Length: 148
Image 1 (cartoon, helix red, strand yellow):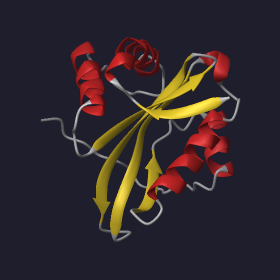
Image 2 (tube, rainbow, N blue to C red; image 1 turned 90 degrees about the vertical axis):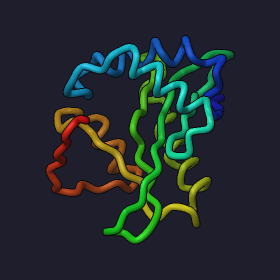
Image 3 (cartoon, helix red, strand yellow; image 1 turned 120 degrees about the vertical axis):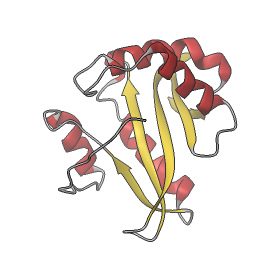
């Protein structure tokens, strides 16, 4: 049985290990420092108003984690929930945790948010199929950034 819980400070080491694996994968296009990873966890376990962290527990341990960032979408006229990170340990992949998490988000934020949004590496065809199965569709935007 999988349970979805808010990330807590006691989850830091487990989440940090999973984040290292995720951020070293082809899903991330640039290097992310240990300092940034720790700051992200601290934001999730603290009282930061724009980010929430979740852990997926199974069999007494952590099977994965997710981070959600809140913003406002002028295009859709309301709060947007960005699924920033979604990671499952290899032995839990394909077991329906992601699908369960998407349903959790829809139930939890219905009425508060108008949009759930995520990014995916174009070559990650397995994840893309899962997202499509859950009702997500592609937006053909190119994203641009400038780091400060």
